[in-house]
Amino acid sequence: MVSASRTDQVYLVTGATGFLGRRLVTQLLDDDEAAHVLAMARPSDPQQQEAQRYIAAHADDARARVGWITGDITQPMLGLDEARLAALAATGELNVVHLAALYDLEAGEGLSKALTLDGAVRAYELAAAIRRRPEHGDRPVRFCQTSTLAVAGTYDGKFGETGEELPLAAGKHTDWYSRHKYEAELALRHLAAGDEVPLMIARPGATVGDSTTGAIEKLDGAYCLLEYLRWPVVRHFLPLSGREPFWIVPGDFVVRAMAALVANPDAYGHTFNLLYPPDDTPLWCDLVAHTQKILRSRTYTGGGLAGLLAVIRYGWRLPLSLRALIWVTEARGIGPLARRMLSGMGIEPHSLRYAVDNPRYVVENYQRFGVDPPPPWRDVWRTCVLYYRDHRDEMKAGALVAHQKDG
Image (tube, rainbow, N blue to C red):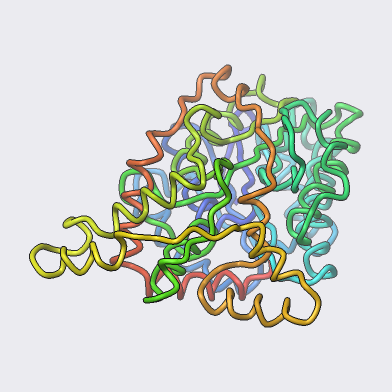
């Protein structure tokens, strides 16, 4: 436990070993020189040592303000014993930032529910229990749930930032991850109705790499397009969805926004769609065209003959109907085979619907609280593609490690 005083701001971050978690820890320390962070990792987390090295390297002057604790979101009070709970209650104002979950679109119902839905409820119950302990006195406890834009499911319409939009998405989820994130929001809003522990909901978009370096640990989401384009003949038959938005967002923006918001007591009680403003969001067809332009550029391939080959490889395409492809994956008989083929090409079959059936998100709240939008998506995605070119093997390995995690 870090040696925080009773007047300090203390942040308990679950899922602190992940891509966003470790970066959020360092951002919180950078933003507030008096802040203390308790980074929670599950027992035998394969990413903990790497995360500790990352935080130590990026927060060298603040290492005394970081403490690591072992927790388990499948257990009541996250597995913390009485001594740990008492010590936690004796610290300053407590802000619980819950990132831990199972991001796996192919995961089964039971495991997904235990980690994504029940884990969020247990984390909130921990925050409420700390608030009630006499050692904590009258100091506030706050809770931030890291949700996802996918709570909207395949709802086709405007999706706001008040919580009143959630009933619109009932029954519109195609995988257990998005459904259990949705149900977690409902459950947490019910628990927070008594105002004992104020609740904030942060809904990041499809997170890609750092906007300046492109760095990211794993290969999934929007990077499935790059995996698909590696196939020599198939790359020319591109599934397009017309002018549907594709809600990518750089990871460093998500971290910057969350760090600013969780540190602001006035932001609790609000929901934040952490996305580009609608007018600045890429359309699926524009993202595909821009990706092809990057892939055939001299910057990506080198000059001379390599540039000519790039034009041949990426200079033409035959559009396919993405809705027709989705129909094939869901058709009786050929559906399982089609899904296996797509998975082999790097595409997550469950994610296809989010490119054709998605809402128009309201993106207003974070700017009202002084958070600037991310840089232009074309610049961000170019940086991410170039990073993928040079680090694909590392990203694939990172994806394997991430799927080995269960909280």
